[in-house]
Length: 169
Image 1 (cartoon, helix red, strand yellow):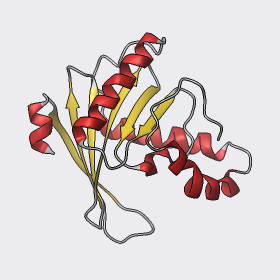
Image 2 (spheres, helix red, strand yellow):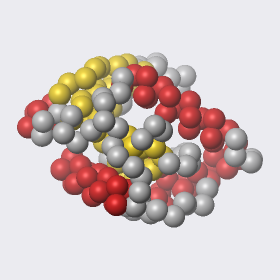
Image 3 (cartoon, helix red, strand yellow):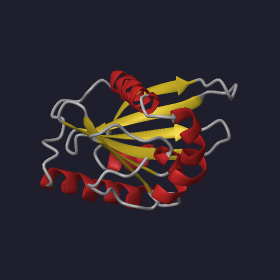
């Protein structure tokens, strides 16, 4: 992954470890930044050894697009202006191409300019998680809808490019 990032002009940003309540071992995260694309490449190494990745581009103050290699990226509904798509089983080149294509679509449809200055990856990640958690917990019956989101929604939305219409949550 590091070799691919370097070849594409991404520069290493930081390495993080995230601990969860469910697993004793940490999730390892590596972030890379492309100044040309104004995009983060984020790689996740799960405790079971599975490696997933995503590309994240910011637009304006809070809008963003995330294109992931795993369907779990589609698990929870996202707040307005936060777009996501997932393409499980695809190569990094294929996922990146889908991300670039979706960024161009958003720019053509008025999402605004890409975030010009590289944000602090740790702060951006934390703010995005809080924003999504507030959005999800503000939805009616969110606790019960979680079953639907886990077993059905994330599977239905995988392998589908972003749609500028809002998906029903």
